[in-house]
Image 1: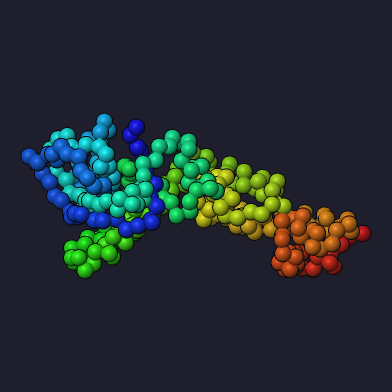
Image 2: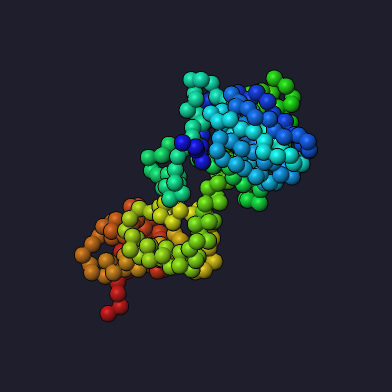
Amino acid sequence: MYPDYYTYIPNSLPSIHLADTAHIQPPYVHFRRQSADYILYFILSGTLYLREGNARYTLVPGDYLLLDPHFEHEGLQTSICSFTYIHFSFPEENMQSLCPCFLSKEEIPSHLFAKDTDTSSFLFPKYGIWNNTSFTNQLTAILERFMENYHQGSYFQTYSQTILCEILELLSLNYMEQLYHHALKEKPIDKTISDVKEFLTLHFSETLHSSTFEEKYHCNFDYLNRQFKKKTGQTIFSCLNEIRIEQAKKYLATGLYSCSEVASKTGFHDVYYFSRVFKKLTGITPSAYHLPQ
């Protein structure tokens, strides 16, 4: 089975065997081979035509590709192209540091946000885009830093290995950011904001974190929060607090519950924080609150 994704676990430093920037032009065609290393390509200019296993790739500026040592690869035709390449491997005892991952597109969001997923595990596609994303500048800078240190010699070897780990992690973060934006584009933001407000109304008594919204809406919380504030004039958690306090007023008006009980029933697990928020939004403390007669 041919992998489209890899999981990276930074439990050891990779060995770097070769790295450089190549500039090719006709009549050069990449020869057929099966390398013992992973090979990471970052396309800088031109076009590169490659086959790996049964998959064919036409790589253009801004693309990257991770070639797998389990498959043969070769060039398919001549072209003019510039690309940075990094040959690397992991120690035999840590071969699980980089593993093929077989996921359908429907499984990817749940895999990224699953509660039982190792938080130090990073997922990224073997073929993707690293240009024109929010991480482009970081990736450009870190590639330059990697090449600069790698060519300094063995004295900088460990530092170069560490930088390569950062590159793999950035590829994962870069991919997640693309997923966030794609998910929000598929669903009109107004509908998403409406869904969030309804969710807050129904689940105000529960413990809610930013990760709650990332898991539910498969999008970056900071981005969603900015869009929510742009549409409503307040942040998600400010809206949540207003909903909680309105409900707290109803509980307090009955005279049946203590302040600590009302705090717990409205999602505030710290009665002192509940009191501060209540006074901030109503001007009085919970104990002094009563409905007008």
